[in-house]
Amino acid sequence: MNFQVTVLKILVAYPDGFAVMEDLKRDMAILATSGRDWADRTRRLAARVPDLDIWSQGLVERTSGGWKITSKGRAALEFMEAHPAAPEPSQTSVVEETTAAMEVAKFLLCRSPPIVPSVAASAGSVAVGPVNERGRMPLEGRSSQRKSRQRSWTA
Image (cartoon, rainbow, N blue to C red; front, top):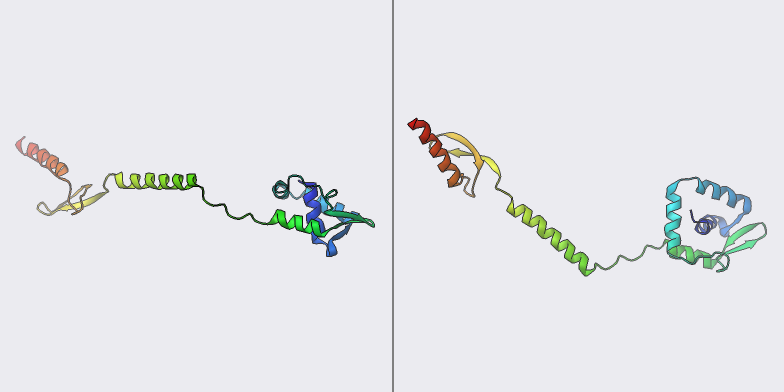
């Protein structure tokens, strides 16, 4: 957990941005034990302002038994919480996406034809195997079936 970001977040939640030390300690204890989400969030926010020092930069003032966030402190917190603009897609990411799309297209186009039942009209039976665009089995499949039938007839 980043202590300085947590102090800013606590103070901004109070009316006029002022909290007495007892309230600060209580809120700090609650957030410190609230789990990993809060710690990760404050670290991410602090990473946006790596040289953050709430005291020397005048973001927080010590006044009569408590701390108060200044207008500079509010501005710094708003800056940390602002969502960065979406980055422009880089040329390499466009190339990577295009390459991935081409690989998917190759896979889909180069697959073997689907195996569906095709009806042999002359025999009145159903043959299972790959079919061409007319819904018929390719010649090599039918010729091998004919040869096997011829062998069984001659035997």
